Length: 88
Image 1 (cartoon, rainbow, N blue to C red):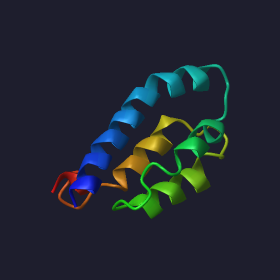
Image 2 (cartoon, helix red, strand yellow):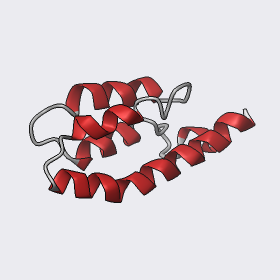
Image 3 (tube, rainbow, N blue to C red):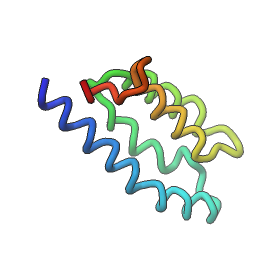
């Protein structure tokens, strides 16, 4: 539906805006899980949302977890053809 299409672009915008904040916080020693727990609902109801939450929930709390965890979680929201799930 159009609503999901629009929402996906807002979600990726939120994630893009959060990257500098996450980078600074990680450099300051804040654990990734403390920040990403607030992002768990971003892909609710979207393609790949369950995988997004699973990856953040299981990997963000591990020692040394960095932005690569968020990259893997976002990659899980993409369809096999490489486009964002809602870009159809």
